[in-house]
Image (cartoon, rainbow over all chains, first blue to last red; front, top):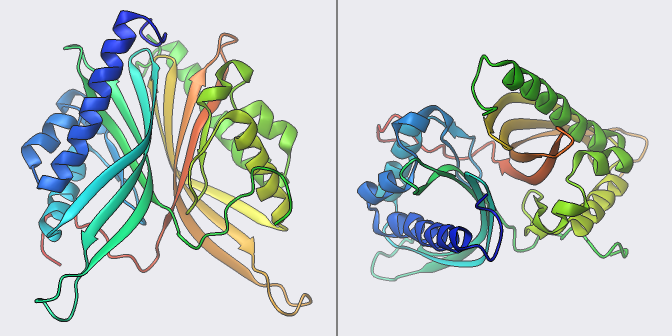
Length: 160
Length: 160
């Protein structure tokens, strides 16, 4: 079993997963669709691939998922990801990676000479599957916007 | 391996997963925190429990997750879930369930005599883990709002 912290295979998997998760965001930042294809599962898992872009309906199937990323990459001029709060949970051949996507991107303005940037936050759930080649590849990605002015659910149980 | 469609164990797991997923939403609708606790993982998996409410930062840890549901249930008067597009993917001891949460709830109005209702849609990713007792319990829940007026990512690759 690979999911036990402290075991060599666990440490190796953890390292590969962290790296693969970084490559996923690097692919978006650079609009690198070859890298994007490498990160996602292959044709054997094509049917099971799912992607939920912020505020959007889910996209199912590898081809549609990759095409949606091609559209996203074509639309953005500048986008930078600062990934924080990375949490990796390995359950045998499946890994659940949660992280916060802190995104800095350019905003479309009226004057193209004046650069404007906006920041936003998203909660991501990235589910990776271990392939036969002992690699981890992305099977499901969900990115949910965090509203800055939202009234947080009070987990302390106190009113207000 | 339990993830092969057509095998008896797969069909049994699928049936239990669909039922458990229904119970999760029943627990919210009825504000039934006993049922909510039954649906989520037990104390052995407490650290790994994660919940992302729409528009909110992620909540990690079973106690905090359950407390957040207690707050949600205490706040709502009327909430009804119509779950559609249920998609179950079993990968050995882990199952990924995606579904659309179509939610009808009452809206706070100025006149308490006049009932007002609002509908909204969310994309959910529910990750279940098979326990030693051959039950499936919720480990991660993410609910991402779908904006009705959103500009969908065009997966046909055509402009516009």
